[in-house]
Image 1 (cartoon, one colour):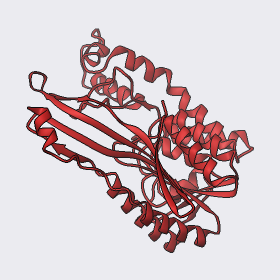
Image 2: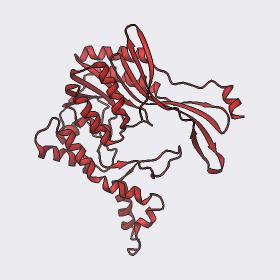
Image 3: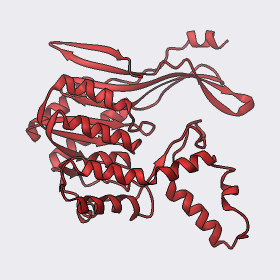
Image 4: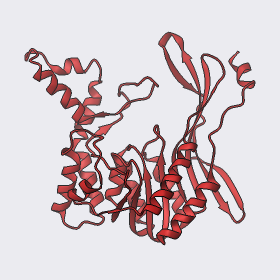
Length: 337
């Protein structure tokens, strides 16, 4: 029945707006007098190690540059991947300038720490970078995805439990273990110092004073009351980051670019019946002059009634490449594992 329904439905595909995005990148390059590289995550995308291989494909296409302007719109991800991304960028240019029109959170904030300068628009913000990770045994959300767990959240749960005058002879972690696996808590605790180390390494690309780098790293890891606390431009300056205002003209163009990427990143779901569907969704995007590299999630979904949850089947997700070759536009699949 499901196969018959699938044959009767044309699967929806996310739009690839390569011509429109390339036009905006061309305009921005002219205004900046340099080379723009863009990095975009949709709400379900994240900074990950595969991004490094995707960025390598892009940088090989554009070649070595004097200065790279890096547009970032992301809610974060893997901090160790951030270090690898900055390290790779630095091998293809002498200077990196981060241009931020909107959200640049968590591991994305870490990427900006490796930039010589950060240019922020009126709606832009960074965040704290305290430890938060998604473990193979992390709790599952309603979409059957693993959720991130932070050390600060765990500590606050324990403090709240203690503040309520609970029986001190009882271990609060016994209650916590019912919701968060012990190995997840152990992994988060182990990773506590990792974030500070990553920040210091990233800042070392352009800050020689170790004490200054340590101060900035400590502030970003422990000062703020929540992981998502928005660090606006004046606060970023107080921290010690080299921050400037993004010009109005460039900010407007980057917002237009973000709108196009958001359209590309909308979830395209084809419903075959009540329990079978297919999902196409672009999660991560890298782009520069003449080349676009993106990760497209491409899966069948089946609703397992007895468990009240969706499970994925026939996963054909992959990184894909669109590139100009003379007057032609060539498309290919990147086999990144």
